[in-house]
Length: 236
Image 1 (cartoon, rainbow, N blue to C red):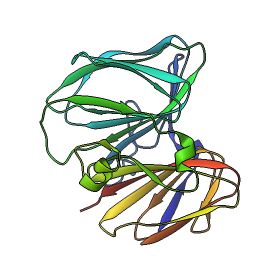
Image 2 (cartoon, rainbow, N blue to C red):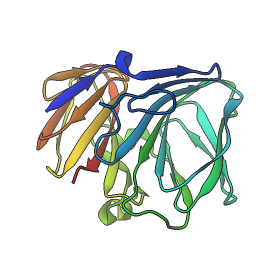
Image 3 (cartoon, helix red, strand yellow):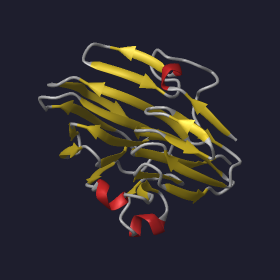
Image 4 (cartoon, helix red, strand yellow):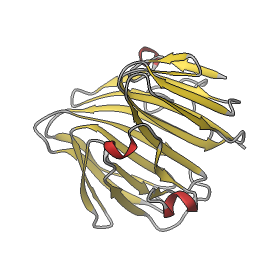
């Protein structure tokens, strides 16, 4: 089953410096029908104004993945980590027993990013942060695993998360297709970052999502030049 979720139906909060859309219940937005998808708990589509951002605040027991769509984000945390993540690249924070961090757009342009939270397999553990460049050219026409809890993905270069889940991304030229198998024990959640695609014949536009269950194989075809991410998380 593929359930299309239009961008226009997402939760919305505009704080001036932050214009956020919520795929799942978050902050002041609550929809009992959208509390998560498998162990995927949050997918926020954030637009952050220049020279602004999230001041220092705490987290615990959550795997937090940031995918930068345009611009850049600068991270600082209570562990002493600091880093700047640019468009197309990824950072991961395993909150574990607790960490405080800030995320600021120090650029002269708006930053657009996806903030993705996945529930860890177990509570606790030492907090950690990591980031990596993922050149878009290297995932042209194929899925590249960006973050994962699976040993084989981590050995192949994915950022590590403490969850039986993975986040992959791809870019496709108009007319090109990717076929991907999804284990029946997992749910898929696909979000288009740019352009538009069809997923097993269902058209998914820019910033729309496809919530995927009981589809052992999906074929993603670019209706125009496109970029998308897909999270696969365990349902049972």
